Image 1 (spheres, one colour):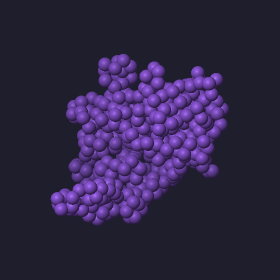
Image 2 (image 1 turned 135 degrees about the vertical axis):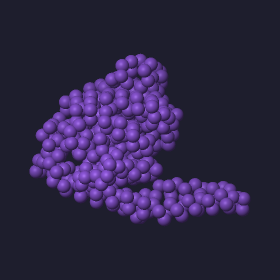
Image 3 (image 1 turned 60 degrees about the vertical axis):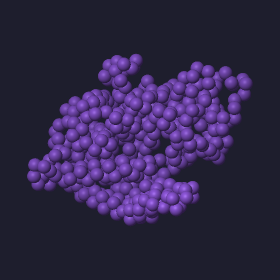
Image 4 (image 1 turned 90 degrees about the vertical axis):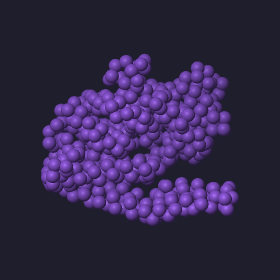
Length: 453
């Protein structure tokens, strides 16, 4: 998933033409003069790209209004498929509809792409459709999801890196209250499950399948580490070392290059062992806990209590903004928190327990701040505001904290090329795993209860 960032920090990596990015079909050329009045032209200032999409930070040629456009391109992996224009249209529609439920003031709508010129850094779109439906979109056309741009210095991951602990507590209290309100007032029921046997979202049977899916996801890290494909630090250091070796005088910089060699040797020898030992231990522990009959009963109780909803499913700091008091649309606290980029591509991830949704946020904050006390502060506030301080809720949350920490580690290492953050997630997963074992088996001593609220 993407986070909208300050254009000055965005990647300026150039893109292939839209026709190459999206599919083999060419994109409609610049519109005729008859249709020109209907079109909007934007100058592209910066581009940020991933495997499946790109974000364009753009400014209207005449009005100078700045927006962000998300464009999907041809892509498919174990999580979702964007192989056809119809797949991409469906995903964009779902993204708009779901995100408008959380932050309607930020998501403007969908616009057909008329032209995208990477050399001239120009994109031309039709008028933005505020509330499009599937049959209102033109077959085989490509659409951009158009959003307001938000400032980087109000994004939560930036705040976590720059604010002191007292300030962070105030921000996190405001955030957990907002998430609690959001979860209590989500009226959208889970979408119908597509499995042949029609098992229920959130049931122990469905969660067992999801656990198997997530652990197989984690195996990709182990497999690629084993093959030397996931050693991101090794790859980066190796490229830097080779570049310097060709540009510097070897006699003068021999010691400097030798330092790189030491880093490479350490990275190459320890990368797989590090991931392997941690992931295997956590996987085994989580599987063992899930097999406990009490946990299966807890999950079924959550279903009966109607705690399974169509959630945001990606409550990470890179998708959350906390606006300052003096902002024009943030004069009251409940309007200051903006949550963007909800999961739209796979119902397996979004039709979840609200505790699972919240767990994503907790482990992300803990992994980034390395502060157990801030994470515990969030949990206490959230459970109180949602009236979920019973033992079943606490036990289920403890399970989801481990699962979400594993997923965060895998995504950081495998897809986001953020190995340091991935390691931090793994440390959180280990810590939370000990907490989970204590809940199941009983704490060995009072210090074992450090994480349990």
